[in-house]
Amino acid sequence: MQVTPTVHAEPEDYEKYPTYRVNFWQSGPGQVSFNLEAFVVSGALDVNQVKEWIRDHAAGRSYELFVEVDGTVPDDYRKPRVAALIRIEGRDPNMGEMTEIGRFIPG
Image 1 (cartoon, rainbow, N blue to C red):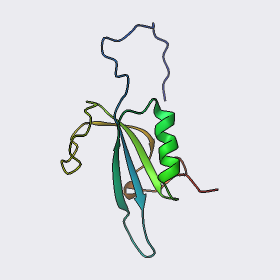
Image 2 (image 1 turned 90 degrees about the horizontal axis):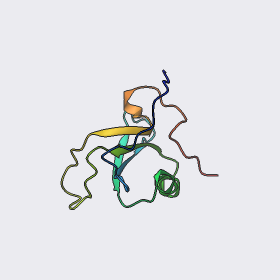
Image 3 (image 1 turned 45 degrees about the vertical axis):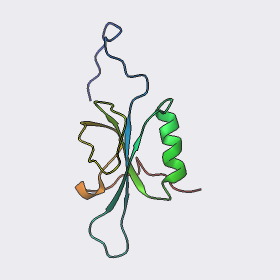
Image 4 (image 1 turned 30 degrees about the vertical axis):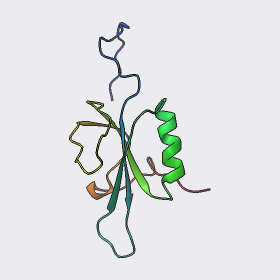
């Protein structure tokens, strides 16, 4: 990781309410791969509100949290989302060893 100081400047483009994507991952006994349940979250006040929603709906599943680059609000859940994604947290468990980051464990 590299950290470099920068001069603060206000960007021309600013998304007040970004659109997020949440992927929940779960596998059953004897399964080699994980099943995916995906959601689009729009209109959240901030990422903390999205993480609260994840905590309330994870049910022990692993997850990935993304910001969608184009930020379009979903209009039809049956249409595939094609926006580029920036991962904020979590990992696709099908891509290798899973870490505890991106996992809510019910308490």
